[in-house]
Length: 242
Length: 130
Image: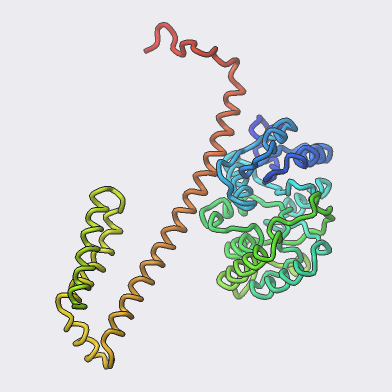
């Protein structure tokens, strides 16, 4: 697996993986990526208390360690800033829990490379509990976002999207879903769904939907953000409407 | 008696604010807003008729209501300003943490590219260097 800072084409896609206490998963995830493609990978260790960083390093990935927990989006944004600094034109973000399959990376990259969109979201609406689907429906209604899978972290971003998301406005966000999509929308960037398949999480738990209290907080946060940032002519549309 | 208490609170608040600035526990720009509040309290204590006159002019039947309303508005504005400042600081802190992680990784990469680490206790300067 080439290192992200190794000599080579600066425009090569970079795979960014935020990870928190994923020591058991990160090795197999990186091996799977290596089996499918030869892109550099950077793992952002979000203040893990286990051996996530050393496992990632042992598997050949460049590893960035955050001294304090910033959450999944804060860690992802670190990777995006790193990519901008290193001159990468395209970034693919993936989860470290094995949910996202590397065999779909090329599909996401193709959607961005063809110019059809600035951001491609790996979409798998079949996953998730009825509660999650209810939350998606409410969020779509309030925010005006017409994507099928608004919470998917399996995405490809082009250079314009990277420039927008790595700025200070991106740092104001707490989650990577609605706020990020609406920030892209506000900058007239095009986002499309790309159908992919996803596996179940290896530990079966969602960090955002881990308890009723966190669900309530997430919903209040997301609905308020969606309401405040809503625009009359959304640029964030499903693939068929693009 | 009430006027004495209010003016004493105002003067005490002013003294505490000055002390905090002297001991570098409060920024001067933040102290200005608090001193205005303390001066307002002291003024109300020394000249309680002011609030009565203003309330009468505004048609407020019970003047203390006006004093409480003004205090509530002032505190609300102050809290909002604090939250805005907190958001800015949190943003800067988060971006600094991110930058630290990026720089640390670059430092590690540079270290790995060095031919060999100098032995512990070895001199880093060459004989002719300053």
